[in-house]
Length: 423
Image (tube, rainbow, N blue to C red):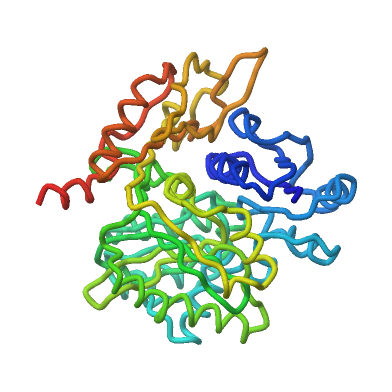
């Protein structure tokens, strides 16, 4: 099977690494890719925001299957363009991608199909939103409705912080994504990320993870795209997984089909495990980044036929096998992230992969033959271990062998699971 992978981040490096192991693969292309992905795939210079250009490449190279990594091309309808041309594609239609592309759309689906989530209101101007915030009080959550690269959500612990967040959204800081704002109730509990594959009618549970959004140790500082993750999430017990499937995932799949937008691809549920049980914080319509990296390390099954089954409506007979070990990834970011940071800083050395450790490239490029950091989040140092504590120790030991003067990381990734293991 000839496969084209869309994307250039750490998530896509992890997907490329896993897809390249498939005996069913005959050729793997990636657009635009990165130097890490280049070790697994042939990089192609296509504008992935140009649906027609992607389709033209697929026709020229007789691509059998396209795997779309990031959310933006999905929201822009890339999957629709490819499907309409008869090409199998892993990823939802633009209509179904609204589950990530519009926070308000998702909340409305939850309300219509009785999916547990925080109470909410939608607003298109600042003053009514601020009046609602004053009425509800803090803590409260302010979300830009559209795609904001993981930075459009403020969990406001004070009224002033909430009011400032409303003003920020409507100031244009998030562009069109902030033209509408969702204000929702603060949910108290422990967060978890839960993933399942969907083919429009069937959902196959994959695995759970926990992400660390804030930039600093002890979960301090501003939100980021994610500073590290581990899998599995101990809070996602077998009972909690069963409840999540029954109360959240299955009603969503049925509701999307009922609404005329059947969902295919990967459904990533950001959950809050509250005293009442699992409640939905938000949906993403692609693998998490950096959660994908730990999931791919733990997945025993061949990834390619699983993704293809989701794309072709044959998921009912599919099964996914997982390693019992834990996996943990630490993000190395450019100093200054998530604010301004220097680009093209040299990375002198990255430790070689072995059976239990792997460094995934997230924001790198080759410049004059030398590896440089081009993004905010640059490397994902990932390891397996018999426990989260063991995986953490291996990951940080590998990270300390990275030679990159402009990099920084959190030193406490996995702290919740580590505390549980000590208890």
